[in-house]
Image 1 (tube, helix red, strand yellow):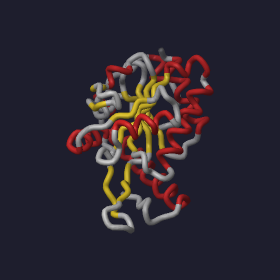
Image 2 (cartoon, helix red, strand yellow):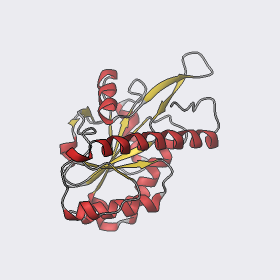
Image 3 (cartoon, helix red, strand yellow):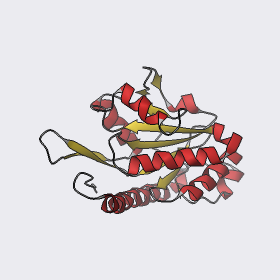
Length: 220
């Protein structure tokens, strides 16, 4: 299930990552359906909402994280309650998917006007060795200064990815000591109560994301 960004061009990389995002989404949806009988009801508006992304309401994963922001503060999902939060796993040297995803989220947030203030972008690095606090702050600033970047130790990163059922792996580069990172190419969306609701496949488009965020914002 790994894409190889160091050995493929941008177009091939995009296709590969879209396949990975789709595979993860199918896996996520299957697990949700299997657990459907035990999943708690989310109430009338949530139950009747139609989403463009994969609805994973009631999933028993992606429940929280505990990682450090660029200012050294320990952050968890509870810090973002009251906002619709979009969590993405990536790395700052990603050539295509990561900047595309973050730029699209910034575009959608801006398009929502005042409602955009209730949208929170969270970027979790899968390359903590190279993604320093300073690098992450600069990277987020290029998209939206309100977005939060998080990093942890290699062990914390692995544990967080496991909790989210996200995958990542180093891929050796063409020169000695260089590498890229294959990773899940999709985003996890949480409602204002901090509950995971959607998995957004990479390549779904800004309009589909905007529609889903509007639907969740309307639920309060």
